[in-house]
Length: 306
Image (tube, rainbow, N blue to C red; front, side, top):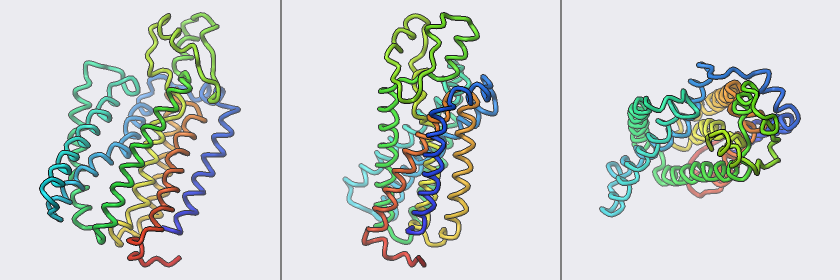
Protein backbone atom coordinates (compact mmCIF):
# COMPACT_ATOMS: atom_id res chain seq x y z
CA UNK A 1 0.00 0.00 0.00
CA UNK A 2 2.83 2.39 0.79
CA UNK A 3 4.31 1.93 -2.67
CA UNK A 4 0.92 2.76 -4.22
CA UNK A 5 1.18 6.28 -2.83
CA UNK A 6 3.48 7.29 -5.70
CA UNK A 7 1.15 5.87 -8.35
CA UNK A 8 -1.86 7.68 -6.89
CA UNK A 9 0.11 10.94 -6.87
CA UNK A 10 1.12 10.37 -10.53
CA UNK A 11 -2.52 10.00 -11.58
CA UNK A 12 -3.53 12.96 -9.46
CA UNK A 13 -0.82 15.09 -11.08
CA UNK A 14 -2.03 14.13 -14.57
CA UNK A 15 -5.56 15.33 -13.82
CA UNK A 16 -4.38 18.51 -12.12
CA UNK A 17 -2.46 19.36 -15.30
CA UNK A 18 -5.46 18.60 -17.55
CA UNK A 19 -7.67 20.66 -15.24
CA UNK A 20 -5.39 23.67 -15.68
CA UNK A 21 -5.28 23.14 -19.45
CA UNK A 22 -9.05 22.80 -19.57
CA UNK A 23 -9.48 26.20 -17.97
CA UNK A 24 -8.15 27.69 -21.23
CA UNK A 25 -9.41 25.31 -23.94
CA UNK A 26 -12.69 23.90 -22.55
CA UNK A 27 -15.06 25.31 -25.16
CA UNK A 28 -12.85 24.80 -28.21
CA UNK A 29 -12.11 21.19 -27.27
CA UNK A 30 -15.77 20.28 -26.80
CA UNK A 31 -16.68 22.07 -30.04
CA UNK A 32 -14.14 19.90 -31.88
CA UNK A 33 -15.26 16.63 -30.24
CA UNK A 34 -19.02 17.06 -29.92
CA UNK A 35 -21.16 14.29 -31.41
CA UNK A 36 -24.72 14.61 -30.14
CA UNK A 37 -26.45 11.35 -29.10
CA UNK A 38 -23.35 9.37 -30.05
CA UNK A 39 -24.29 5.76 -29.28
CA UNK A 40 -20.78 4.69 -28.31
CA UNK A 41 -20.44 7.73 -26.06
CA UNK A 42 -23.80 7.19 -24.35
CA UNK A 43 -23.23 3.46 -23.75
CA UNK A 44 -19.75 4.07 -22.39
CA UNK A 45 -21.08 6.87 -20.18
CA UNK A 46 -23.69 4.52 -18.73
CA UNK A 47 -21.11 1.81 -18.10
CA UNK A 48 -18.75 4.44 -16.69
CA UNK A 49 -21.03 4.83 -13.68
CA UNK A 50 -20.95 1.09 -12.93
CA UNK A 51 -17.67 1.04 -10.90
CA UNK A 52 -19.22 3.41 -8.39
CA UNK A 53 -22.64 1.83 -8.15
CA UNK A 54 -21.19 -1.67 -8.02
CA UNK A 55 -19.87 -0.67 -4.60
CA UNK A 56 -23.43 -0.68 -3.25
CA UNK A 57 -24.02 -4.23 -4.45
CA UNK A 58 -20.65 -5.38 -3.12
CA UNK A 59 -21.24 -3.71 0.25
CA UNK A 60 -24.65 -5.36 0.49
CA UNK A 61 -23.18 -8.79 -0.19
CA UNK A 62 -20.41 -8.15 2.31
CA UNK A 63 -22.99 -7.30 4.98
CA UNK A 64 -24.74 -10.63 4.39
CA UNK A 65 -21.38 -12.40 4.46
CA UNK A 66 -20.55 -10.87 7.84
CA UNK A 67 -23.86 -12.16 9.23
CA UNK A 68 -23.54 -15.69 7.83
CA UNK A 69 -19.80 -16.15 8.30
CA UNK A 70 -19.12 -14.20 11.51
CA UNK A 71 -22.53 -14.63 13.24
CA UNK A 72 -22.79 -11.27 15.07
CA UNK A 73 -25.59 -10.35 17.51
CA UNK A 74 -29.22 -10.53 16.38
CA UNK A 75 -29.61 -6.74 16.39
CA UNK A 76 -26.43 -6.21 14.37
CA UNK A 77 -27.51 -8.95 11.96
CA UNK A 78 -30.85 -7.24 11.36
CA UNK A 79 -29.07 -3.93 10.73
CA UNK A 80 -26.70 -5.55 8.24
CA UNK A 81 -29.50 -7.36 6.37
CA UNK A 82 -31.40 -4.07 6.22
CA UNK A 83 -28.27 -2.34 4.97
CA UNK A 84 -27.91 -4.95 2.23
CA UNK A 85 -31.46 -4.33 0.98
CA UNK A 86 -31.04 -0.54 1.07
CA UNK A 87 -27.69 -0.61 -0.74
CA UNK A 88 -28.85 -2.97 -3.50
CA UNK A 89 -32.03 -0.95 -4.10
CA UNK A 90 -30.08 2.33 -4.02
CA UNK A 91 -27.64 1.05 -6.64
CA UNK A 92 -30.51 -0.34 -8.72
CA UNK A 93 -32.42 2.94 -8.76
CA UNK A 94 -29.57 5.33 -9.45
CA UNK A 95 -27.70 3.22 -12.00
CA UNK A 96 -30.93 2.02 -13.59
CA UNK A 97 -32.10 5.53 -14.43
CA UNK A 98 -28.80 6.23 -16.21
CA UNK A 99 -29.86 3.99 -19.13
CA UNK A 100 -32.81 5.98 -20.40
CA UNK A 101 -32.57 9.14 -18.30
CA UNK A 102 -31.24 12.56 -19.30
CA UNK A 103 -27.64 11.33 -19.25
CA UNK A 104 -28.48 8.22 -21.26
CA UNK A 105 -30.78 7.68 -24.23
CA UNK A 106 -33.46 9.99 -22.76
CA UNK A 107 -36.44 7.68 -23.38
CA UNK A 108 -38.47 7.76 -20.18
CA UNK A 109 -41.03 5.09 -21.14
CA UNK A 110 -38.22 2.51 -21.25
CA UNK A 111 -36.79 3.31 -17.81
CA UNK A 112 -38.08 0.00 -16.46
CA UNK A 113 -35.63 -1.89 -18.70
CA UNK A 114 -32.73 -0.05 -17.10
CA UNK A 115 -34.01 -0.89 -13.63
CA UNK A 116 -34.27 -4.60 -14.43
CA UNK A 117 -30.73 -4.71 -15.83
CA UNK A 118 -29.45 -2.69 -12.87
CA UNK A 119 -31.12 -4.97 -10.30
CA UNK A 120 -29.66 -8.11 -11.87
CA UNK A 121 -26.25 -6.43 -11.96
CA UNK A 122 -26.46 -5.29 -8.33
CA UNK A 123 -27.50 -8.81 -7.29
CA UNK A 124 -24.42 -10.17 -9.07
CA UNK A 125 -22.14 -7.71 -7.30
CA UNK A 126 -23.82 -8.58 -4.00
CA UNK A 127 -22.80 -12.20 -4.55
CA UNK A 128 -19.27 -11.05 -5.36
CA UNK A 129 -19.18 -9.09 -2.10
CA UNK A 130 -20.40 -12.18 -0.25
CA UNK A 131 -17.54 -14.24 -1.73
CA UNK A 132 -14.94 -11.56 -1.00
CA UNK A 133 -16.00 -11.41 2.64
CA UNK A 134 -15.77 -15.18 2.95
CA UNK A 135 -12.24 -15.33 1.50
CA UNK A 136 -10.72 -12.37 3.33
CA UNK A 137 -7.49 -12.95 5.28
CA UNK A 138 -8.24 -10.38 7.96
CA UNK A 139 -11.94 -9.91 8.92
CA UNK A 140 -11.31 -6.91 11.20
CA UNK A 141 -9.35 -5.02 8.57
CA UNK A 142 -11.93 -6.07 6.00
CA UNK A 143 -14.74 -4.47 8.01
CA UNK A 144 -12.75 -1.27 8.39
CA UNK A 145 -12.17 -1.16 4.63
CA UNK A 146 -15.88 -1.62 3.95
CA UNK A 147 -16.78 1.22 6.33
CA UNK A 148 -14.06 3.46 4.87
CA UNK A 149 -15.09 2.78 1.26
CA UNK A 150 -18.75 3.42 2.08
CA UNK A 151 -17.83 6.71 3.77
CA UNK A 152 -15.69 7.74 0.78
CA UNK A 153 -18.38 6.99 -1.78
CA UNK A 154 -21.14 8.74 0.15
CA UNK A 155 -18.85 11.75 0.64
CA UNK A 156 -18.06 11.65 -3.07
CA UNK A 157 -21.73 11.83 -4.02
CA UNK A 158 -22.42 14.57 -1.50
CA UNK A 159 -19.33 16.58 -2.50
CA UNK A 160 -19.90 16.53 -6.26
CA UNK A 161 -23.61 17.28 -5.81
CA UNK A 162 -22.84 20.25 -3.58
CA UNK A 163 -20.33 21.73 -6.04
CA UNK A 164 -22.77 21.26 -8.93
CA UNK A 165 -25.41 23.21 -7.01
CA UNK A 166 -22.97 26.02 -6.29
CA UNK A 167 -21.82 26.59 -9.88
CA UNK A 168 -24.76 25.38 -12.02
CA UNK A 169 -22.45 25.27 -15.03
CA UNK A 170 -24.37 24.79 -18.33
CA UNK A 171 -23.46 21.68 -20.30
CA UNK A 172 -22.01 22.10 -23.78
CA UNK A 173 -24.75 20.01 -25.39
CA UNK A 174 -27.36 22.52 -24.22
CA UNK A 175 -25.36 25.51 -25.45
CA UNK A 176 -24.86 23.86 -28.83
CA UNK A 177 -28.57 23.08 -29.02
CA UNK A 178 -29.40 26.75 -28.53
CA UNK A 179 -26.90 27.80 -31.17
CA UNK A 180 -28.37 25.33 -33.67
CA UNK A 181 -31.87 26.66 -33.01
CA UNK A 182 -30.71 30.28 -33.33
CA UNK A 183 -32.15 31.18 -29.93
CA UNK A 184 -31.33 34.58 -28.46
CA UNK A 185 -27.52 34.89 -28.31
CA UNK A 186 -27.58 36.48 -24.85
CA UNK A 187 -28.71 33.11 -23.49
CA UNK A 188 -25.99 31.21 -25.33
CA UNK A 189 -23.22 31.93 -22.90
CA UNK A 190 -20.28 29.71 -22.08
CA UNK A 191 -19.27 29.75 -18.41
CA UNK A 192 -15.79 28.85 -17.24
CA UNK A 193 -15.70 26.47 -14.29
CA UNK A 194 -15.07 29.27 -11.78
CA UNK A 195 -18.01 31.41 -13.03
CA UNK A 196 -21.28 30.45 -11.28
CA UNK A 197 -24.32 30.58 -13.59
CA UNK A 198 -26.63 32.77 -11.51
CA UNK A 199 -29.37 33.09 -14.13
CA UNK A 200 -29.93 29.36 -14.63
CA UNK A 201 -33.53 29.63 -13.36
CA UNK A 202 -34.31 32.09 -16.15
CA UNK A 203 -33.05 29.58 -18.71
CA UNK A 204 -35.30 26.91 -17.19
CA UNK A 205 -38.39 29.11 -17.19
CA UNK A 206 -37.93 30.64 -20.66
CA UNK A 207 -36.93 27.54 -22.58
CA UNK A 208 -38.16 24.65 -20.42
CA UNK A 209 -34.59 23.53 -19.74
CA UNK A 210 -33.97 20.65 -17.35
CA UNK A 211 -32.02 21.29 -14.15
CA UNK A 212 -29.85 18.36 -15.24
CA UNK A 213 -28.41 20.62 -17.97
CA UNK A 214 -26.84 22.83 -15.30
CA UNK A 215 -24.73 20.14 -13.64
CA UNK A 216 -21.63 20.23 -15.80
CA UNK A 217 -19.03 20.98 -13.11
CA UNK A 218 -17.65 18.67 -11.80
CA UNK A 219 -18.30 15.39 -13.60
CA UNK A 220 -20.06 12.88 -11.37
CA UNK A 221 -19.57 10.19 -14.01
CA UNK A 222 -15.79 10.56 -13.91
CA UNK A 223 -15.71 10.80 -10.13
CA UNK A 224 -17.68 7.55 -10.02
CA UNK A 225 -15.60 5.86 -12.71
CA UNK A 226 -12.48 6.64 -10.67
CA UNK A 227 -13.94 4.57 -7.82
CA UNK A 228 -12.71 1.50 -9.74
CA UNK A 229 -9.16 2.65 -9.04
CA UNK A 230 -10.02 2.97 -5.36
CA UNK A 231 -11.42 -0.57 -5.21
CA UNK A 232 -8.40 -2.07 -6.97
CA UNK A 233 -6.05 -0.29 -4.58
CA UNK A 234 -7.68 -2.07 -1.62
CA UNK A 235 -7.77 -5.59 -3.09
CA UNK A 236 -4.55 -6.86 -1.41
CA UNK A 237 -6.05 -5.86 1.94
CA UNK A 238 -8.85 -8.36 1.40
CA UNK A 239 -6.60 -11.22 0.37
CA UNK A 240 -2.83 -11.38 -0.22
CA UNK A 241 -3.26 -13.37 -3.43
CA UNK A 242 -4.55 -10.20 -5.12
CA UNK A 243 -1.27 -8.36 -4.50
CA UNK A 244 0.25 -9.16 -7.91
CA UNK A 245 -2.85 -7.90 -9.67
CA UNK A 246 -2.92 -4.57 -7.87
CA UNK A 247 -0.68 -2.46 -10.10
CA UNK A 248 -1.84 -3.79 -13.52
CA UNK A 249 -5.49 -3.38 -12.54
CA UNK A 250 -4.78 0.03 -11.04
CA UNK A 251 -3.58 1.33 -14.41
CA UNK A 252 -6.35 -0.56 -16.23
CA UNK A 253 -8.70 1.48 -14.05
CA UNK A 254 -6.84 4.61 -15.12
CA UNK A 255 -7.30 3.70 -18.79
CA UNK A 256 -11.01 3.14 -18.18
CA UNK A 257 -11.27 6.50 -16.44
CA UNK A 258 -9.61 8.24 -19.40
CA UNK A 259 -12.12 6.62 -21.76
CA UNK A 260 -15.06 7.81 -19.63
CA UNK A 261 -13.58 11.32 -19.52
CA UNK A 262 -13.32 11.33 -23.31
CA UNK A 263 -16.86 10.12 -24.01
CA UNK A 264 -18.38 12.58 -21.53
CA UNK A 265 -16.83 15.35 -23.61
CA UNK A 266 -17.78 13.57 -26.84
CA UNK A 267 -21.51 13.69 -26.00
CA UNK A 268 -21.26 17.29 -24.80
CA UNK A 269 -22.08 16.48 -21.17
CA UNK A 270 -18.85 17.90 -19.73
CA UNK A 271 -15.79 20.01 -20.44
CA UNK A 272 -12.18 18.98 -19.85
CA UNK A 273 -12.05 20.89 -16.54
CA UNK A 274 -15.25 19.09 -15.42
CA UNK A 275 -13.96 15.57 -16.02
CA UNK A 276 -10.57 16.46 -14.55
CA UNK A 277 -12.06 17.84 -11.34
CA UNK A 278 -14.37 14.84 -10.93
CA UNK A 279 -11.34 12.55 -11.16
CA UNK A 280 -9.28 14.74 -8.84
CA UNK A 281 -11.93 14.58 -6.10
CA UNK A 282 -11.94 10.78 -6.05
CA UNK A 283 -8.15 10.48 -6.27
CA UNK A 284 -7.67 12.91 -3.37
CA UNK A 285 -10.04 10.78 -1.28
CA UNK A 286 -8.14 7.68 -2.33
CA UNK A 287 -4.83 9.23 -1.31
CA UNK A 288 -6.23 10.20 2.09
CA UNK A 289 -7.75 6.74 2.59
CA UNK A 290 -4.46 5.11 1.62
CA UNK A 291 -2.61 7.14 4.26
CA UNK A 292 -5.20 6.26 6.89
CA UNK A 293 -5.05 2.53 6.18
CA UNK A 294 -1.26 2.17 6.31
CA UNK A 295 -1.38 3.63 9.82
CA UNK A 296 -3.94 1.13 11.15
CA UNK A 297 -2.65 -1.55 13.55
CA UNK A 298 -4.51 -4.19 11.53
CA UNK A 299 -2.43 -3.26 8.48
CA UNK A 300 0.71 -4.87 9.94
CA UNK A 301 -0.32 -8.34 8.87
CA UNK A 302 0.51 -7.56 5.27
CA UNK A 303 4.16 -8.33 4.58
CA UNK A 304 5.03 -5.87 1.84
CA UNK A 305 8.52 -5.19 0.54
CA UNK A 306 8.74 -1.40 0.53
